[in-house]
Amino acid sequence: MMSTLHRILERLPIRTIDRYLMRQYMISWGICAFAVFGLFSMIDGVARIDRFLRQDAPLPLVALKYFAGMVPIYFTQYLGPILTLLAAMFTITNLNKNCELTPLRAAGLPLSRILASLFLIASMMAIMMISVQEFVVPNLKDQIRLADSYGRALDSIQPGVVNDSRNNLINVRSYLPHEKRGQHVEITTKHASQASSKSIIRAREILWKVPDEGEPYWLLREGEVEQFDISGLKIPVPGPDGTLQLVQGFSQMKLATDMRPVDLESSDREIEYLSFRELRDQYKRRPHLKHLEVKLHRRIAFPLSNFILLLLGLPFVLRTESRSVLLGISIAMALGTIYLIITEVCANLGTRGQLEPMLAAWLPVLFFGALGITLYDGIDE
Image (cartoon, rainbow, N blue to C red; front, side):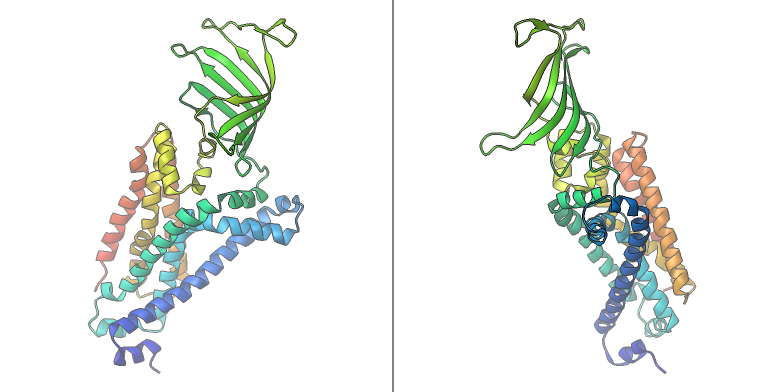
């Protein structure tokens, strides 16, 4: 009995064949996405069940909120290109299994033309990743952070030390991004021409205030101030009763700094919630932070993985005309895992300064892209 594609080929133009292949691909993508995210949810949910149970809300609702928040992050940062390759491998092995590629090639269609629809969908998936990263995640970042907190032992993050333009070193031990509130703060101010400390402020809490009129500012609550001269000796200050004290307490104090909440939210993990424009503006403000430059280039480079993984994976099933769906899926998972590992290793090297940030972001694309083109070019048309 002739297959569906055999009958289509006899009567209809190549555009109809493209639509047929794209429809088969989208069905495969839906199946793979359901399977991958379902497996991820099961494994991740079991690992975090004890943290879900600590929440006041019902367990199913907590789990639903957590995974609803995490799916966009994992799609844009990790799973998007792997799903593109999985669906392509699933589609091609099914076509091989039903002997549907042979009549297309026998009709004189080059392999590159047959697969053009798959690469067109890969471009659509790259655009979809960019759109989710640029519009969905930044607009829902507070909700996503709150959902992420359900799966972590702590609701807060531990940001790095921020060095502002006023010679302040601001160390916030824990920070709640969705509340714009930090706890256990220490601000060390240096003398302009000396390495010694000019003052040290310690506060229980720091809050980001946005008044109806005027500029936003940081408010310190329940703290103390110590002042030092150039030689490092403490400077006594008058207390409430008129006596000199080495430490001056306060209940509230406005902090003079150009630090913004995004500075505390620009740890490697929190960058995922920023749009490209926010990330670029942050890099302009803090050009010395190498991980910002790595992530900035990666925003452009990583969506190209949709094409690169297709170039790497398709030759394995096309050369041997493999009809094993399991083999195709296994190859896709192996290639995707290797690619992600190399990408993360390069990013870490760039963050540590062992690789140039631009090279750290683009090296996996250049290396695997060249390898993929070589493998794809070796396929018999």
